[in-house]
Length: 486
Image 1 (cartoon, rainbow, N blue to C red):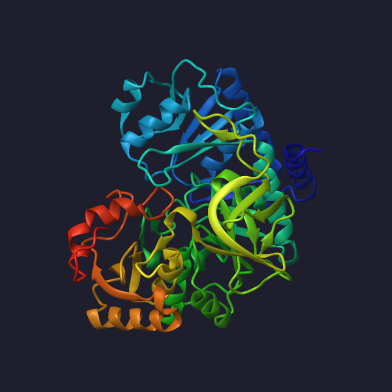
Image 2 (cartoon, rainbow, N blue to C red):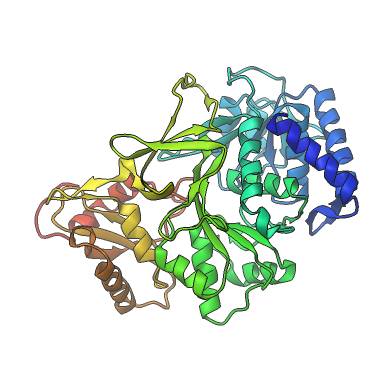
C-alpha cells in the first residue's frame, strides 16, 4: 500500500471507528470524521468538473483551508499554497511560474488577478489551464524565497509528504496526542504536514483564524488565550514562539496543562531554551527538516532524545555527511524545482553542516553562511545567534565576522523596556559560553526589526544576510577601528 493509499484508508477507518469525533474545527464550526470524507470527495469532484489542474490556496487559516487542500490531494491535482506574507510581486511570480489556473480565496489585489488573465467565478478566480513543465506527480508546490526575494518552487509528491506524516505519527504515538492546535500559517509546509499527521492519528484539529502570530509579529496575550482556551495535546512551534512562551511562563502566565508533544523546528534552538522548557515541564522535542525533504528529517522523540541534537532520522530517510560536513538526505525528497532540471543524485544536498554521533544529528549552521575570521577560524553565525537570542532582551540578531579581527552583532531588542545595559549583559553572558573566536566584540542596535516586509527576512523567517549587511554597511564599518571591507 502506498503512503497515499494508506492515508485515505486511515481516514476511512476513523469514519468507522470514531464517526462523531471532531476532525476539523475553527471559529465558524466543525466537521466530524463521519462527514469529512464526503465533504472532501464533493469538493474534489467539483474541482475535476471545472477542469482544474493547478490550484492555489489564498485562504486564511481555518478548516476551509484544510478541506480544500485535502480535496486537491483527493482529486490528484497540484496544490500551490500562497503564504499571507508574500508581496504582490511574489504572488505574481508564483501564479506565473506554477501555471496556476484556479485560485481559491479572495486576494487583496483583484487588479493583479485580472492582469494575470483570471476571471472571478463562484469558486474564486480561474483562467484556462496551461502547462509549465513541472515534474510528473507533483502534488504540492511549496514556495520558499531562500536568500532572494523571488520565491523558489519546490515540487513535492503526495508520497513524500505522507511518508513524512506517517513517520511523525509514529514518533509521537506513545503520547497519543488527540487534540492538535494549528498556530503557524497553513501555507507554510511545517504545520500543513502537522495536520496530515494529526488526521492519520484520528485526532481533532483546531485551526484558529488568529493565533496571535501576525507575520513576524506576535500578539502574546492572544496566543496565551488561544492555548488556554483549546488545551491542545500537540503543537508545532518555531524557535521564536517557544522563546516567547517560556518568557511568558517565567513572568507568571499560565500555560495549558494538557500539552503532551511540542515539536520545535524551522531554526536552531538555543540549548538554554530547551533546558528551561524541561525545567517548566514542557514536552519540547527539537527537530530538523527542509522543504526539499517534505519538511521533517530528524526529530527528538520519547525514548530517542539527546540534548544539543535534533534527534535521529525518521524511519523514512537515511542521512550521511559529505567530506565537508554537509548533511545529505536520501528518502522522501523533492521531485525538483520549478523551471530547473530534476536532480538525479541519490542524496539531496541540504546546504546545512552537521555532526553525527551515535545516530543523533547536530546542526552546525548553513554551509554558505559560515565565515572565516581574520585569525582564520571558521564560525557558523547561527550558533552564536541562537546563544544571543536565548536572552530575553534580544529578539533578533545577525552576527558577522568575515575577515574581521572581531565579530560584530546587529541587535533587535525585544522591546523598548530593555536598556543598553540589559543587552550588554546578554552579550557578556553569551560570550562566557562561547570560545574566543566566536565571541561578540562590538554591536549596534538595528533601526527596525528584521521582517519580510522590509526585505530583511525570507518568507520562512530566515535572515537575508547579504541584504542586511549591505543595508547597515556604514554603521557596521563604524564599529571597527580600521578600514576593513565587509
